[in-house]
Amino acid sequence: MTARGTMRWVGVLFAIGLLLCVGPWYKSFGSTALLAATKLGGLIWAGFAAVGVSRQRDTDETQRRPWRNLGLGLLFMAGGQSVLAYHQVILHVGTPFPSVGDPLFVAGALLAVAAFIEFVRVVKRSGLPLGDGFAFWWPALVVVGVLLVAGVPLLRPIVIAGGSPAELFLNIYYPSASFVTLVPLAIMLRIGLRFRGGRLLAVWAPLSLGFAFVLISDVLFAYFSMMNVPAVEPVMDLLYASGYVLVAFGATVQYRLLRS
Amino acid sequence: MPQLFEQMVDTLSPDLGKSSATASVRLFVGKAKLTPDELRSEHLSRIAELMKPGLRVFVGASRADELARAICALDDAQGVAK
Image 1: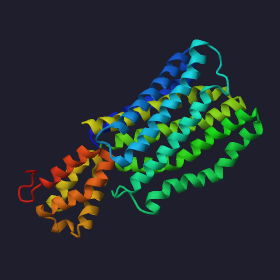
Image 2: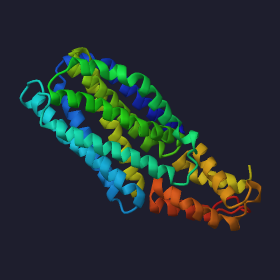
Image 3: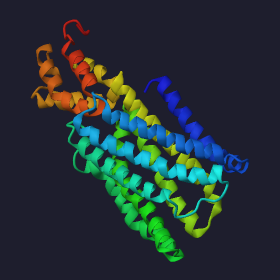
Image 4: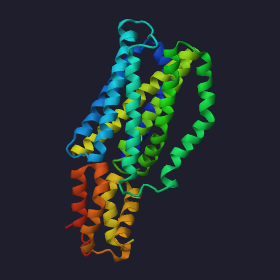
């Protein structure tokens, strides 16, 4: 990696770290609107960039569908986020849960899972030396192993906390969808890191890392809403916001790479 | 490392990064049933064709064609692209 590239990454990591550190205080000074705008803006930007990649003349046929699914998924999530933003910023009330935004988040998550599974399938068949057998699948195996051990203890308190059938379904669905997405995502993150020093690192590392942030936030969200732990809310918001911006950054780099 | 091999790696490195570029060149040179030492400019177009489908997946058709053309233009005698 060039010195400039390294500095850029250090800058991104520093900014994320800073956001995570100042987040809880920042939030308390009335930054709800800014955070909501960052999340919504990040999702819309990421969605359009990903759809843009799928529509590029240069995009390989095998990559069109996953990029389109990812883009549509992100735009569905943007729809869901706009419902949340409406309550938080315009009405100044707590977001109802479940809300009309939840079906959009559910559909968005499904499309994102489908996209990442297909990315892995396409990449595996690309013919580039990205590992065979265990060398290719080990990140997924590690994630599955961790989830087998940690999944039940993580979901158990959510189930025990109860709630209406819709609340319970969504609180189990969001972290479960996140766990499922994490499996192909781990593979894509490893592949992204193999491109270190190249332009493709700037596509796949932020995209995978951004989704990882969103997945962590989904798990926190399930805890926050069911277990009533308000302390995690600022961290969760910042993880969502920085995750969406990272995804947008990765998709934009891919779009520009295809147009250059 | 033979000069042509290194030039191919240098051509792919800005997109794939040095490590993936090296692994890719090694793989496709091997697929052409050659060793890096046996690599000559007359082999380049075949290797570039072998690489193109995989490159297209990541960098798109135009950039993959561009990289393939740059590889074909490498010259083992001159040590530079023609």
